[in-house]
Amino acid sequence: MTDTIPARLAALKSTPTPELKSQWRDLFDSEPPPFNRRYLESRLAYRIQELAYGGLKPETVRRLERLGEELDGGDRKKSRIRADAMPITGTRLMREWQGVEHVVTVLSDGFEWQGRPYKSLSAIARAITGTRWNGLVFFGLKRQGGRA
Image (cartoon, rainbow, N blue to C red; front, side, top):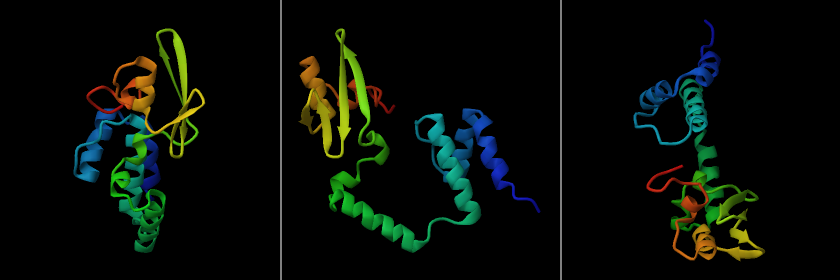
């Protein structure tokens, strides 16, 4: 008997997006998230392998949870923030506003704009525009009224 898992994984790259969403519903028993195609492919690939070969060992899950607690200090508010909602440390965000290009660097504990630290992108967007903005929307990381 041949292993069909590698073939299923390879087929994800050429599968139409509506079919990926259908597979998501079958494999996760939920509606697919409104993320990009690459995200759907990677999560489906993981899920296919997880169902075929088994998931993480319980001790691995416990270790990951411990590491997560060390990262967020046990702060439940921080742990509810989606890991994929924010760009990784070192990422440079660029936005042109009224003919001026603004560059923000993502830090481990906030952001830097024009050499000054900020706790949020919204504070930077407010400093740039003079009005209140959702920082994720202003820098194109999230659509207004939805996710990116």
